[in-house]
Length: 635
Figure (tube, rainbow, N blue to C red):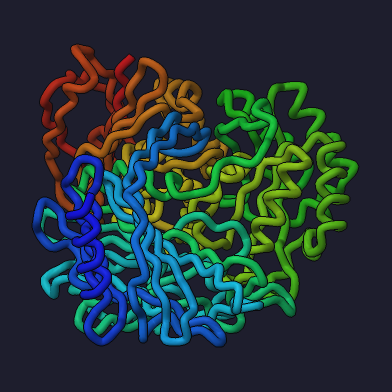
């Protein structure tokens, strides 16, 4: 004990802090008050640098915690162990284990700040806490948080769109194409930063950055446009990204607690299998478990657009859902004008009698977008939301899709959270479109089934160049965007796409039904296209599980190819796609499945043909056609 006291005294005097290790002792975090009285941290994996000394610090109005800092103390290392369940995501039951240590610092004015670090076997997380009683109001100004990479590191990033740009001034919506395998330090092309998650490769170690635990009290962040020397810094939203007359940055009269800054670290398989994005989120609010119903949905809009949002077409899509044994039909924009509330209630009754739930669309606006689609301005106040949501429940509607949000300001994040709370109270499921990254909200609010935050399938119906880029983009969506949070890419078309020449093969399209994680998977194919495929494909889609018990990354590289395995009960589903223009053979180790034979569906000889084959477990080789894919089921 005496030796420990001496070491602690030395640490406080020199500014050093004890290294914090992961439970398996493969990851080490060191926190240091530097000679210039700034704060930094670094991360090692198996003794090798992952993040070089990287800056930490906050700036509040009237309190600067970015300089003039002294280490006042460190807490004992505390083991964290938590078991929780998820209806949406890569695993049904998740066990989170980490070691936590809190570092107490004081600035030149004697104000106190804490930085809490957690280290798990798959990564590191930290957050700032300011409870200083002498600061009556804690108003966020900025932070110096950064992530310093070795110059040889490669980056895989999506640019942030400029606020109020794009169609109907609906940006930013996390809907740009990824830039892959670029050197660190390259500026963001749109000068608005880079979105989360952000993926990096440093030798054999991969790193994914995001944030988690958004409770509506804080704004959402991104990586800054410039990263000189490979040092990426946290940046905040821009001034237009607010609810009408709402606040941009976090401010509180109580304790200021930032979201967790999350750093998944490890081999590519470790990072791809990580659940840190929900591990660090707040536990679930009460919600009737009987209403948490993940599923699959028919949806007319991607191929038929607004003109199809009429009673007879939507009734046809309900029948389509019945035939496919799907759970929902999504009725999109303009339903209030082109169908009306009374007829929508009739549709909901018709669907319910056949075991299908109806979901309906809303425009989130507000003054932040110019999109004319209705219903709009119906959800802006709590009284209006409660009234509208009660009306929908009485009509028999099961959930809402809400579109065209205005960005990442604190007031806009609060709007998301308020919607989720009021929808939960009404027993409604939620899908956010034209939206920010969920950042673990699906754990806190079990009624959040999915969110877009991706340049999804619908863009490929607008312009040939978007479809030309969709194959590598889909791989990036599966490996980066979908890494921690559900994603409503709205995949899968087997037939024609009007004036757009489809370049992906049918096996590629089918594989997305397994690769993409979404609490409700909205399929873009219409009845006529589904009728063109073999019965065994339709049978596969009828029996496809609605939720997954486990998931494993098997092979892949961003922009090139990806193969994943997902478990439902005693069955394993394996799916993969090849985004390249030439054939690719992947070597897979399926030994974890046991000695079983799988039924595989893959591409046939023609661009629009399927074929069937048998796939053994164990170590196997699978050849994928150009822009092709496969699914295999081991029962």
